[in-house]
Image (cartoon, rainbow, N blue to C red; front, side, top):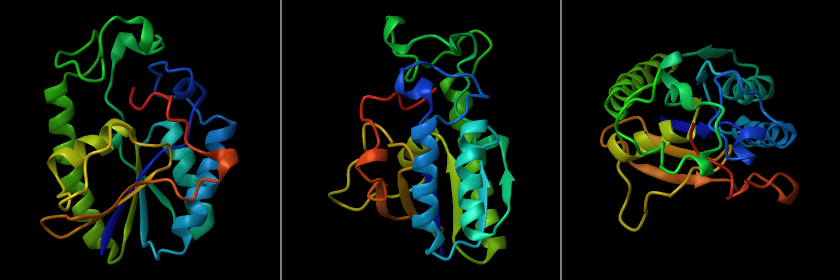
Length: 204
């Protein structure tokens, strides 16, 4: 049975390319995207839903819960990387790339600490999937999904890591080693009026 990795819907700060606080909600487009991914996964037989406890992810997960009748389990291990004092600042004005910085911003999380947290999160996801006895929907953030793709799953030959993860994109990976990815960063459920904006910030 697979893991369904889902990025949250768009926020106004995603669109404005701002590193966002933890309590940032979905914007109007993000709410439509959440409804669209909910419709898509409602027919995939998911047995359980786990989500980052940050607001934008929970709102996306709650749309899936409404469509499936399942409850959402919130897990702080699935939070986006913590950028501390950089939250609230426009990404393009910083003069450096905080998404790839190795050191911890003031009050934030270093790359190594983030990677260790995602290792713990992935191990927990495998346990939850086994307990669910069916596919597990995992609603989280762009950098979290990228970290999982880089270190914890296997991409088949010819499948390359995406430079960014689309809002409400769906990635499917086997829960059994070597965790082969069968679908990567798919946003085919988004119609023109709710399409992922490639200019939006993925991370933070």
